[in-house]
Image 1 (tube, rainbow, N blue to C red):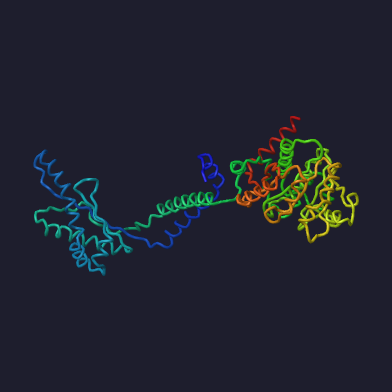
Image 2 (image 1 turned 90 degrees about the vertical axis):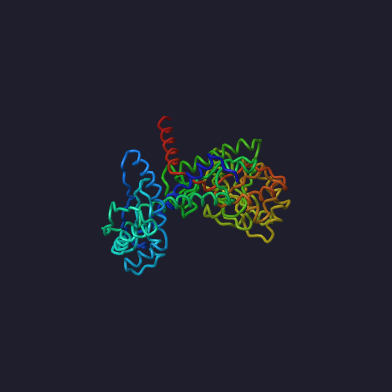
Length: 467
């Protein structure tokens, strides 16, 4: 998967909250760990210098350079096992020479002839005792190797007045940085291996199929709240649902989404007479039926005569949206139990009619591919401007393929973050083999930032005032 710089920036913006959460989490963990789980340490230090006799300015310069070179030799002498064995005996504490070596740091001070010896332990008293022993033993050990060495004390060791570690600020910053880096790496790894639909642009790049529009994602426990007919007062009572919990700006975005899809549909399906459109999805739970109803309502609001046809003869649910009975329906017409006129329902939405699925048949695929089904579509063609056909997911069952030759085109409904590109490719291949005219995609449950919702709402309010 190739990501441009703009894709990377947009990805990080979309996942910014996860980056911040990870950063705060790791920052907190490292701070708590350093405060409660790392024992405090205490450091005592002594500064020593190499003493030479400066008789002239030139000699002083030479002696200083010599002392700076010699100090490195002295430090290496003090890093020997012999030195730490002597310190261990002198201090009288229960530390081995190896332990003392790991506790001790010896370094040159600012490229001078002065060097510092630091001892860090978990006890202030032990650090002080050890540094006192070092102050005494260091000159003796150096002089045992180099008898003419002159070593002086610049700053003697003192008892530590407080802990020198751990450095909680550093731990906290390291934790924050680690949390940020790990979250960014995780985001990119997930993005690379993610096979789900995540944006309109990505979908358009992968397939030579237009995107007719996208439907925003608004959390709700009641799917009836997504019907755009909820904005028509007398429909609320008929559907027996409460008004959407979202405010006017939310309703506006949903309405405008379907209006946009309706307008785009007219561009991709330019023909005279009845327009028969199959609404389908690759897999279940992509919001196909809800989208079918809202598309039918949106078309009916233009004054066109619209029939909503439930051709999911296995699990049709369109009747539930309108609180109607499933029987009689399409299957009852196809089997000759009833006729069109007695079965088609005039809904309380002006210009919108509904034909439910009817009785559950043992052979749904055969019924949809039957001569009776073809004759039914021909009759409906003469009555309606639009026939919206809700069908079962093509990757689950092949029922919809029997309707391809009867319709003018297929709209493929996918769900952001749920439908995979593998599912879509499989569905498109089946459509192409059946000779389907794929009109385009509708993307469901698209993420929209609250700032965007606010912009839409401000625009419509401004527009209504100007009007």
